[in-house]
Length: 148
Image (cartoon, rainbow, N blue to C red; front, top):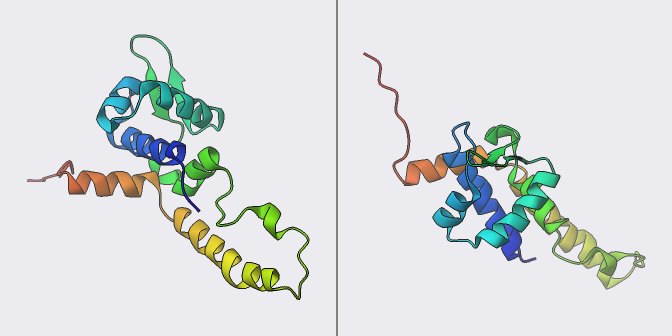
């Protein structure tokens, strides 16, 4: 399985939004510039994300995008499935109507299904907040609270 450009760029843009929005709308142009992604391409990606209810948009001078839910409730798997479809190492049509005594069936149950399960478990365990926090930490953007 290979994640397409749409999935990779879309996930990057969603993490960017989680890092930089701070409850405010973020212009798509700012995300495009920070992530070095074409604005036209991001518009297409964000149309899918908006349709799926993952982001909200506001038009106008003060407009932009904001996450529709808190970043700790948006799983990477949800974002990737919106942009990629089902996450599977093989095309599901290849496993339709298999003889349960065939080599293909053995491979499906012992390899492909287990790989799919592992991939889905992983992407469903990581949130945008996890990735945003890691990015902030790596780039010294953590905000520390000091109490006296």
